[in-house]
Length: 482
Image (cartoon, rainbow, N blue to C red; front, top):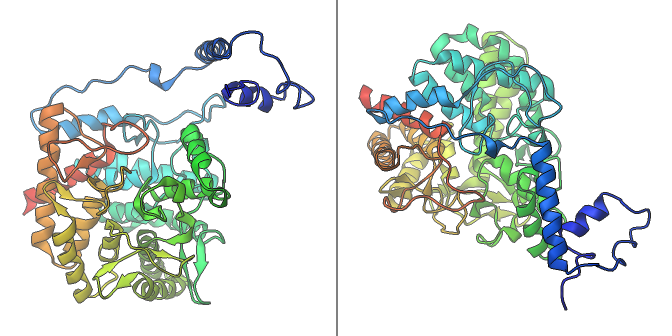
């Protein structure tokens, strides 16, 4: 049976959703006056003309060419100027961009706005470059977003407001304190506390056996992502009926995790149709919240705030639960926990190093994690994200700059210096190799085969690239100091 354009497809959707007729049955009963393929071609041409006449597309903007630099470090310093955006004058009803009052750094490529967790790693590189003015501007922008919206959105776009990203604002404040002292961050403690309350809302925290809660990623919306509308609808259409009810929220929650997408979130560890993000308590998120609680108790204690002990108690309770639910003594690794199945997942991922990064584990556990890192995750170009090769971008063979940073500093927290330096050396060498051949810094890298570029994901490999620049700049400084 041939396709009936008055009952399915883009034209059908547009007519019905626009409510052109009082009776929704009118259009399905209509008789086509021309061949369906001609009507569809005409509709598409009209749509393209309408969009081009009424919108300035981001793809219309010319690509900025960065001249070749004498060294990778000099190239990164040059990129800060390219990736810097000036303060936005005011909210513009014609754009989805959320205005920010201070200058900021964008990742690059298709990512033309500031992103939450990217920004911490970018700030580490800015600090290493002596650009603390930009670091302070980024912190002020995030404080502004918390004031305006109660949290830091995924990015400064209106369609990102229903979710956040891994909470690294406290790490940005640590960085600022490290460089400028406690007085530089005192004014932001109310913002940090407000962000903490956002993460502890009724949707994001899950009570386990009447104990203190652990947390999960979430999204307030259960509709296709605006920035990946077609892709999400295709996943929905291919999913089994019993999986469709919350599938959009599961996809969006994975986007909040920053790991969009990974076998971590997939019930069968392979297909997007099995995504179950909101059923999973993630190791990384809970470690970051532990770090936030512990740091808040310390900062508030300096101010003699009466509720400093509240955060100290919460941190200790969370630490105990992280070890109880995420640590596998037999395998010597920290795994995510699936509340629907009441057991740990089977996915080995670099989320398992966050307990070292946040100082949660004892020396024996840290040694076991380090041994597994060396045996399973260490590759010629650094550490690989997971051990699963699925075609998703947050799986093997890809390595990502922020996870190199988390792993290295987690190891350094437990005096695993040799392995940490080996990861730094391998990742910096890989980025230098790619820069020499392409003149670019990439969003992600194939750390398993140094002659093949990274792949997977919903979009082509992006260059720029904010957090890679930040991590590599920080690593280069680290190597020069030792």
